[in-house]
Length: 609
Image (cartoon, one colour):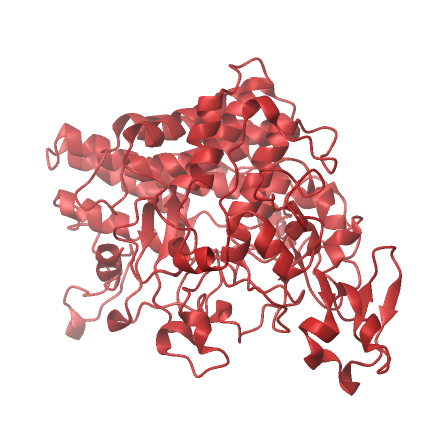
């Protein structure tokens, strides 16, 4: 997304700068609110200031907040050596920020307690109103830019609610003298999300379908995010709050947003999977609705490809449970599959028998650089891995990577859409049809294979038939076979992206993180003598372990190499600390509660904390 990066090099911020007599000149780096709002171009420049906070992609340099692979590494998909990372155990002393820098709580996959971006959007809306009343912009421009501002406000509140639940809602600027508003307690989640719903409806009714360059925020891009955010809240309302009215309301909007994107026929599944993540340019990729461009010439680079280059470590590696969830290429879970060797759970056999996304996501041999020996090379192109063990060109090493990052793609929209439709069907809505499945899951499975996958004999996965939905013996009894397969499709599609932790939270399945399933704590089946003999060394005596099919643990003694065949047991592994359902939502800081008390007001702590 080259245009928005070039614009953001000169950051547009709203600041108040002091000046002395001998420096009485306009600032070149901060805007003057009194004379800034003079044209539609002013509105566009201000909007661009949101992009790196909401359309993060691979982030920049070594920064991990909201970044694929580097940031989203806390979920039930992953296992590491030693003690598994845990949830918070007590409320923090302080949890707040007033900065517009991205703030990140990894174990909640969202922002900290910070309303700077809400204030920014409310200020934006206020200035847009003033420009309309002053005849600076016409009605069409007013509708579009107010939709842009309301989109970002709704986006921020959606993220805050996903982390904290109830939060104070503001739809206008609050004077510093209005303490009753500044220090009001948290509003009910439903009230807040109803306001977000209203914002998103306005967006879908008023934002321009295309605004100049296709990579500027437009209605299709916004619809993609609305499908994501409304699916989250709709399923949260269903599974956590048993509020079917709100669940239907939000899920209906998720479907409407998906309908808009799908019906446009602007986007198609014509890209191989790996090209979505490792390409130097996504300009011509028809599956990608929005992307972020990186350009070393202007110093905008990232490090995600380097952490996919086979050399850099991935301490949290994909676990056996994730690997088992990948469907076989006959369209069936491995316990039901008739594909030869489908039940052999070593890397090479899984590459050969599973959905093509398995081969495109993971390296095809054990790698010590991964905490589970299964290494994810999804976010680098096919050439980058050939430089192992280095040296690497700048585009594949350090923090100088320049492959484009997909921000919103068709696969996510259709998976959000089909899940929302399937959930609505459980609440009296129309039944999912085969045409719905064909437009979503089967559309994804129809992607072309790249030449590397073809050379390995990888096959496309068979289409899903609504008349023959597999009934996976591993399915949770409270989830229908159709929803189970939709959830599986998400898990295969989004490894190391933004979805997994948020998915299991909204489904009320945080118990998956308790690791009561032993597969969560294992790597794949490995014959160390045949596949990874370099670990059969004295340094691994007493440390290297495998688990046999019958559950027996075998430890390497230095003389039992031929018996080191089984599921890899990460070194010194132990389970994460016990947790309760309170970790679905984050506590706020004790300091913030005290600050409210000091002003004579009450700020309620998150339930359970």
